[in-house]
Amino acid sequence: MTDVVRRIASSGPWEEAFGYSRAVELPNGLVLVSGCTSVVDGVVLDGDPYDQAITAFGVAVGALRDLGLDHEDVVRTRMYITHARDVDEVGRAHRELFGSVRPAASMIIVSGFVDPRLVVEVEVEAYRGGAR
Picture 1 (cartoon, rainbow, N blue to C red):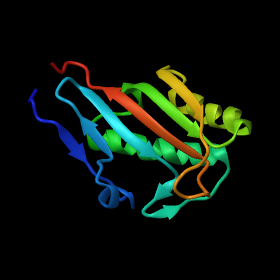
Picture 2: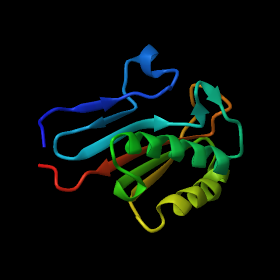
Picture 3: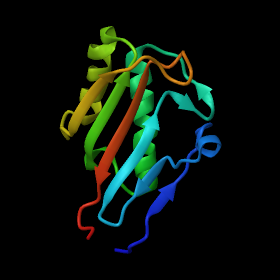
């Protein structure tokens, strides 16, 4: 294992404009994935909260795969939603992806996102076992 911090980018429209990475892997094996939404290739994929959550988690897991990890390596998730009425649908999406993994998780209601069509944003943290 190296002491180098690895950073990866995606096609997210705000990464370059705001100066952040899609994911960062620390030398200790912790991988932090930035907030992910249902924006794919710069286009908002409209849908209900469940669909947006599935897409957002797919973006996050795609970043993990770019680093050689997968959803089984996730140890923490955060789900940000704009309406309390969406708790069950976003929770259902989370359970479908992580029900057997059972990461630590939070769901937080926020006032909104950078695009008003977005109703869900997610973050994930993963761990690469065997790192120093």
